[in-house]
View (cartoon, rainbow, N blue to C red):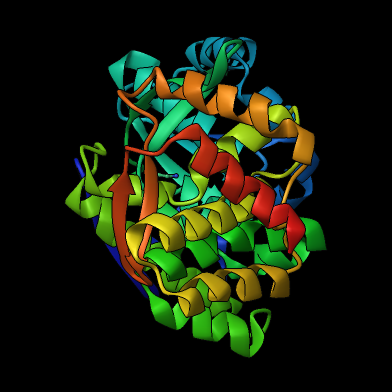
Length: 340
Ligand code: GLY
C-alpha cells in the first residue's frame, strides 16, 4: 500500500487503498467510533457493520453551519464515546472540516480519521489539520488546527463525482503544480484524466511537505493559498454558487498575471497557467462589473491579516509574496483577463 507521511503536531499517514472499509475497520479495531457522513452519501456505507454508529449530515456548506456543529456535538455527547474514541468523517471538504472541528473540541480533543470522497477533499481539505466551521460573517472563521490520526484515500470515489466537481478539484491539483511540483503540469498536459492517481498522490505529497514544515501557517504554508486571494473573493461574491475550485482557477490566472507584472514570472510560465486551466475546462475570468465589490471583499478579508497580500511566483515552483500592490494595477490585470 502506498502511503505519504505527514509530520505536523502529530505524525500520521495518508494511505492509498482500494478497500477503504477494510482499512478503516483495521485502524478502528476495538475503539469506539462514530461515522459522520452526509445523508446523500449514505449508500457508500453499505458493507460496514450495521451497528457502526453514524450521524447524518446535510449536504454542502450547511454542514459547516454553527447549528449543525452544535447538533453533532450534542449527538456525540449523548453516546458513550469517551476520550479514547474516534470520529470518522466520510465526505468532501465540508465533512472533514466539520468532523475535525467536532473532534478537536469534544472533551477538549479526541482522534479523528478523514475519508475524503471528493478530489478537492483528497488533495486539500483532508490533509493538513485545518478544521472549522463558518460564521455569518465569513467562511472558516471558527476553527483550530487538529490533525487527523489517519487519512484514507480511495481513488475509486472519484468515479462517483460529476464532471464539474472533478474539474473543479483539479484547480487545487494544478495549483500544486504551479507552486511546487512541475511534473504535475506535464501530467495534466499529457492526459489528466488517465493520470489522476499520480496527480492525486503528487498533490498530497506537496501539501504534506508544506504542512510538515509549517503546520500553523506562520509563513511557508501560505503558498498553498496561491490563487486564493481573488478566488475566495469571487466565491463570496457568487454567493457560493460557483465551486471553490472554479473560483481558484480564476484566482490562479490573476495571480499568474500579477506574477508576470511584478515578480518576474516569464511570459511562457504565465501562458502555461492559461493553457492548463483552459485544458481543464475551468473558468479563467469573471464578471467585468464585479471588480469594485471583489476589491472590497479582498480588503475586508485582509482585516483578518495585516495587509492585502498575494502569493505570486518568481518562476514556476518558486513562490514569493507581494504586499505593495495598488488597486489600479490589480484592476488593470483583472480587466485584461476578460479581454483575452
Ligand atoms: N487549504 C490551504 C491550507 O490547508 O493551508
